[in-house]
Length: 312
Ligand code: 8YV
Image 1: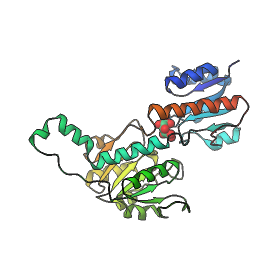
Image 2: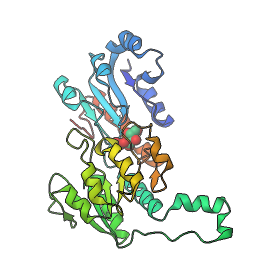
Image 3: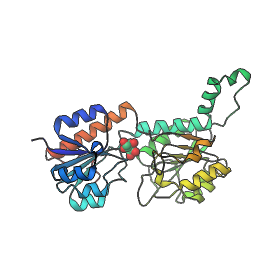
Image 4: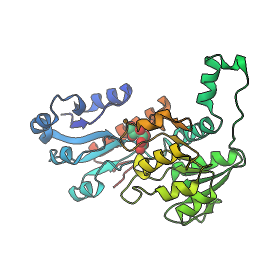
């Protein structure tokens, strides 16, 4: 008998095929009425495959009395109630490390796009405006200072790439890391004041919710730029929009938003913003590696072995 698992949201076809081979997969997002579906099938489900965005809503978890394991397709697990899983003895896995390079790469890409004004330059050429004159001069990353909020696995990959861009790197986090060559700030506002760029890559959690306050953004200042790569919840988004519009903040490259895929419409009109649809890890190669970890974590669990990349 193949174990029953609940898939909360779509994944790459290859990953879905691998899951379908080993399990009876129930596709929650396709259920016309999720309440009715869970009442009928919730008691059969022993595993959940989800992603960082959908997580495991408490009402769904409550409807799965036999749940043993949750395998998430993403590194962030802020949408899964980890203490509640722990209390019920449910194992949770995520996909750390395999996405570090992809997220770091696009972080640099968005920073270059913002400061060299690549979206505007592309439109300039397409619209034939180059024929009438040169594109205005831009800023550059070289020689600027970047403060990283969250020097974890992805933060370190970003730092390496910023150094390669000849930037000075600072960081803020819960603690100073003795083995890191970058200057540590124990105060985020002070780091923002010392930075031209603030790169947000700390995990989403109760502890980091709203950590990038209006005060932090004001400290970054009219010439400073915010790069938001982790979760929208870390940033005071209303203050961000207001400061971008009134010149209190220089610019922003945003991959994540509070209510994504809904993005504050006021941002669409701003020229000092580059917008990206939460695609840090969204490459074929990386998503394949993430999917492989989801499949291997579930397989380990149902073979009676420990999870490969456990959160709990
Ligand atoms: C995914 C992410 O976009 O890893 C994370 O935490 O945010 C992303 O890699 C997410 O898991 C949705 O698939």
